[in-house]
Every structure is written in C-alpha cells, then in structure tokens.
Length: 479
Image (cartoon, rainbow, N blue to C red; front, top):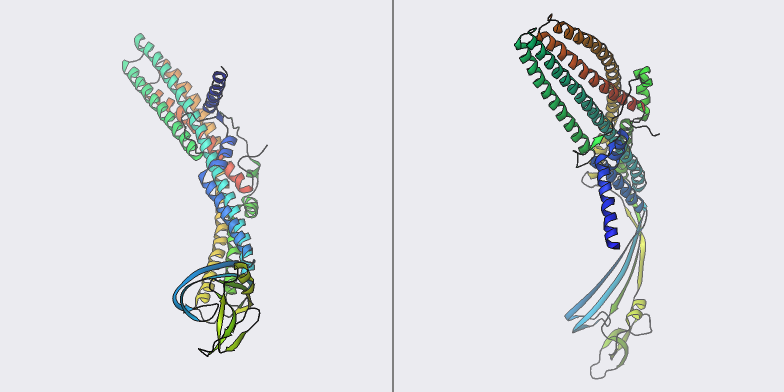
C-alpha cells in the first residue's frame, strides 16, 4: 500500500510539473535570464574566462622553483667495471641511481613579471568579452520577444478583418437577394474572404516561426508548447531621447565594453612587446643537484698478503675516506651494504648559478619583437576603429529611434483616417453609391494601417531599447 501511495505521489508531481512547463507564460525577463544561463555562446565565453584564469596560475608558477626527481636501475651483464671495486669483472651487476634537481629563475629580463601582468589583463579581457556576449544575447532575445508580440497582435488584426469580410459577405448576400447589388459583387467579396483567410494563415505561420526563433535562442526543444506572456508595452518617449547624440556617445565611450575590449587588447599588445624585448637581456638561474647511488655487488672489506701473485692495487678501504695504494695484496670482499646505508654514504650535492647571454639565435628574438610591434600598431588601429564604430552606432540608434517614433505617430494618424474612410465606404456601399472593388480597397488599406501601427509600435520599442543600451541602461532592469 505504501508503495502504491509513493508511486502515485511521484506521478502527480511529475504530471503537475509537466503541465506547469506547458502552460508557463514566459515574460521578457524570464527569457533574458534563461538565455544568460543556458545560451551556448555565453557558455563558451565563460570557458574562455576560465582558461584565462588557468593562464594566470601558470604565470604565477613561473616564479616558483622547478623541482624534479629522477631515478634509474640498470643491469650490467658481461665484462664490465664493478663500480664498487673499480675492477673489470665478467659478471652481472645491478646499480640504482637516485637524484633530485631544483632550479629557479633569478633574473629573466622581467619576462615572468610581464607575463603575470599580461595574465591579469587577459582575465579582464575575457570578462569584457563575456559581458559583451551577454549584452548581445539580451538584445537578440528582446528583439525576438517583441517579434512574437507583433505576430500575436497581427493575428488578432487579421482575424478581425476576416470577421469583417464575413460580415460584409452576409450583408452583400442579403443585398443581392433584394436586388440592390449585382451578384458579381458577392463573388468578389467571397474572394476577399478567402484572401483574408490566407492572411490569417500567413500570420499564424509567422507567429510559429517567431516562437521557433526565440525557443532556439533559449535552447528550448519543445517550442510548440512554448509561449510568452501577453504584455502591454505602453508607448512613452524615453528620457534618453531627450539627450543629444554627443552626450550619449560620450557616456557610451566610458561604459561600453566594445571600447574596453579594444583598450585591454592594446594593453595586452604593449605587454607582449615588453615580454619579447625581455629576451634580449641575459638570464640568470640558480640550480641545485642531489644524487646518490646504490650498488648490489660485493664491497671491499680489506686486503691480505699475496706472495704468489705480487702486485700493487688501489682500493677503497671501508672506514677510510680515500683510495689507498696496497702493494702485494689481494682484495677481501664482503656483502654489499644495506640499501639505506649506501644511500647515505654515496650521496652528493651540486649547486651553483648559470648565466645565459643571448648572442645570436637566428634572429628569433628580433623577429619576435618586430611581430609584437606590428601587433601593437594593429591594436591601436582597432581601438580607433572601435570608437568610430561606436560613434556611428550611437548616431544610427538615435536616428532610428527618432524615425521609429515619427513612423508610429504617422501610423496612428493614418489608422484614424483609414478607419473613417472604411466606415464611410461601407455606408456608401450599403446605399449603392460605391462598387465592391472600391469597398475592398478601403478595407485593405484599413487592414494594412492596423498592421502598420503594430509594426511601428514594436519597432519603436526595440530601437529605444537599443539607444538606452548604448547609454548604459540594461535591457532588463532589476527591480
């Protein structure tokens, strides 16, 4: 029984969550926030920022000493020198060598310091790039959202026109039966009804494509069940439009990331040039080496007289610190010392300094400096170009916003006139003073003016958002 209740609760929770996801109405804030968290391009920019942080860790590591341990174990088979006795013997011996090497840069033409400063600039540039990507995605989402709103309202307009045409068809049918108008007028209005149905279908398709575009931008697979909240965006003149384009440009020049990215790239190029020039200078490294060895052959423990084969040998006597000449004696060999005893007795140290002075390296340093100078000049040009582009974009956005406002106001006046003209045309047609062709023309113009006012409304809203965006006002303002 408990299992049945458990599975029932799980089913209800999953089902309710599924229904909630299908019926959720996305606001523009929801869309922008979701895109900032899930957009693929933004995720790539975030990974670039993480790579810049890793590069800084590598730059910090260049100040630390490098420490490496090594070891080897070898077998010598046949006639070879016994490393313990120093004699040639036909045998198999084993030998272990252990070592530890440490090195540190004392001076390297300030390259390590410049690389660390460059890594900090690279992190800053990655952050600016991420910020710009978020701004661009926010603009794309806002535009796609407004396109859906336009498509939604356009469907309402086309459906209303279809209802008007169908109503006109019924009235014309009555007039035909009454003999007031010819039957040809009824056929013409029937064709108009079919045309309006096509326009409704086209508007619905546009709405579907608009939803698909926004859903793909948000990385949502089930775009058919995706829908946005019906929001009413009143038209009001933005305070930003009361400013001059020069004031908006000066503010954008200080705050927009496009210019900040160009400036940071210029600083990166300057730092690269310093790093390249650092290779002209001498470098000084300190080093330390510890090594020891362990042999597995018998060791010399002493000497004994050898009258039968008189000779003089040199052997290292255990307990002494030097090789001693031993005339007319032979070796007395014992077992090898334990591993750790040999490790302690055979250890050695080596340390010092190494100075490297660049003299001629196939013009590699010279060419690297020359390339860095060219990249520096390119960065200066890019900075100037980014400021010019920003100025052009600001003036264009300002002009577009002004023009969009004028278009919207003109569309309002045109709609009022077309409304009156259409009402007057219906009255004249009802009394037989206008033919059906002129009536259809008046209705088409009225329908187009309704669509135009919707288009100009959302076009104005978006272009004002772009202008405010350059002034430093975010697309979505936090409450």
